[in-house]
Image (tube, rainbow, N blue to C red; front, side, top):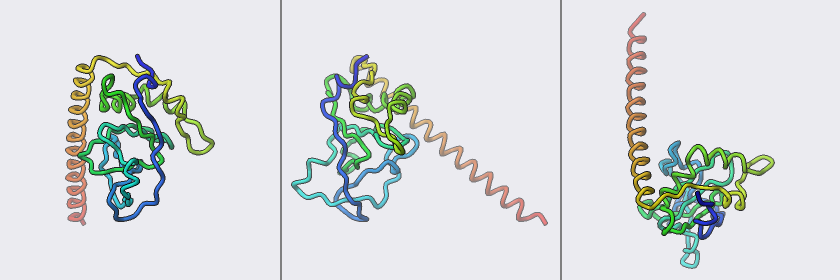
Length: 188
């Protein structure tokens, strides 16, 4: 087990910007992530970034952690997601990539054990926030890189399977509801 302070090379809050319906960069907010912590619900949340503000853009393998509010989760940025800036809801975390894989770190942070710890350390009168010093004290199992990559692969496949099964269930429910509507409309 390693404390996160031994694997995190930098941590900062994302900047606060006023969002617009159009812009050159996506501005990430907590409500744009689904129940599986995937960026799927993106809508009308853009900002304009000038050349001198490029330092706020997320970089490959940055991990963002929703540190304010009641829903804490981690997500690893990939350049496949277009240019993004994390809002001030998020910590932007850079990791020692020689020690820990960013996908593995996000997976570990999203585990029930660490989620429970994050809920317990959240401070705030009305809206809880995870203090930086508490986040840096959390311990994570850090196996060799090959094992981290295997764990991420298994986790990713299980998430895909769950999404497919959830989609199938939703389609079956729609068919059932449609059939019930059809049958009850004909009676009488």
